[in-house]
Image (cartoon, rainbow, N blue to C red):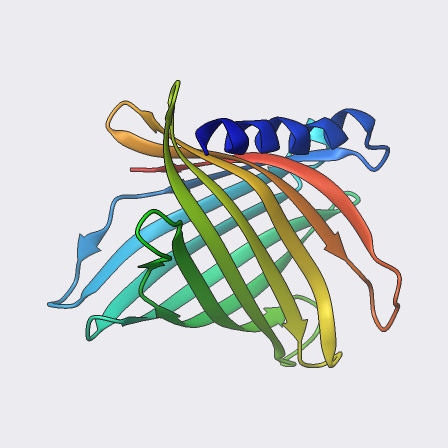
Length: 217
């Protein structure tokens, strides 16, 4: 199984070399969690994005609060601020996320660990007055433990975005490769992502390859 997963990873990386749509770089950092109650923890999350591996075109900061509901569910609440660049101008988006997520579970005795995330986003965009934009996101991931070189896990995943004001799915993020590793005492993931989206009511999808890493303290 380990050799199969690594082979799949290598095959999935090949499209980057032939992509004419460009490739972006994303980097995220998660602080260590701190207890703020008997069942609630909080951590700070940062993300930067560099379109075409050039200058920063996006920055996000959020404070994540997660509360355990029994043994099988968790409730997440996240105030978020996003800064995105269009041309020479920066625009702000203010978000409040609500999540209700089931606990991880394993398929079979030797199967992958399955994790799911269900998020409802309320967004206020600069220049759009007091209008609230609602978006629902669902993410599913399957993770296998491996022991290959520096890597300790292999994950595939997918995330869909549904925008209520448009009444349709407007974005899909497919992760064919996510490799978990250690950086000292910290966890770091390296991933390949294909991010596809459509504008307005169009049925035409456009996508970009993204390579990134996520560091957790």
